[in-house]
Length: 304
Image (cartoon, rainbow, N blue to C red; front, side):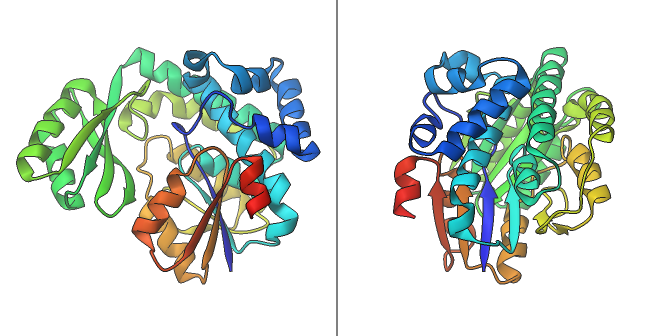
């Protein structure tokens, strides 16, 4: 059985998708459609930069979704019908587009607005994130509790793989967590260059407007189950899909649980569709006995 994986923010880079669009008419059409939907040349920004503009949350999120769907369109016939799909953070919207829960145009508009709202939340209440390596999750959770106050919070935001988690919150609270986890024996605690405290309570102001936007979009029942970041369980109903996408803004990404659900469901071969190979790397740490392949370039597609 096959599972589809869709990457999240941070995987963008200047030149992303360019060779795939040059080699595939389906990929080229995908970028052209996105340019028309958004009313500006997202394709040129992705293919040529500048990097700082591409890195902005409002641009990076639609860029990654479009690259992911371009790769999915190129590979869909060769992959055949997958058993499950899942995406890391914004990648969950890519997964729902691939599964038919919402159409490509609505997915592009939704992820663009999602990025704008998250970027605004980060400006209104600055926050940050940090990756914590080689420390038990319960010890990181305890450090977050100790570092948080009534005015400053830090939470565990990404359960990426055994021994690799990410914390998120107010800058001062995250800095306290870094000191606490180092004292507790973490191998490394790495501050991340992000525009906000994603998947933390600091993103709550973005939720009402994002929910209102999703209420205007027609959702269908997913053609294949999409495993939710929030619950780690498959979503099969349109109603639940939208609700969980809103909750996801402040909830942790339970990526280890998402992969475990798909493996328990019989998936033995995974395709990561979009820029980079981050999820394929995490897959090896979560389930070493399954196969993972990243498809983001024309060369990747040919090799597959």
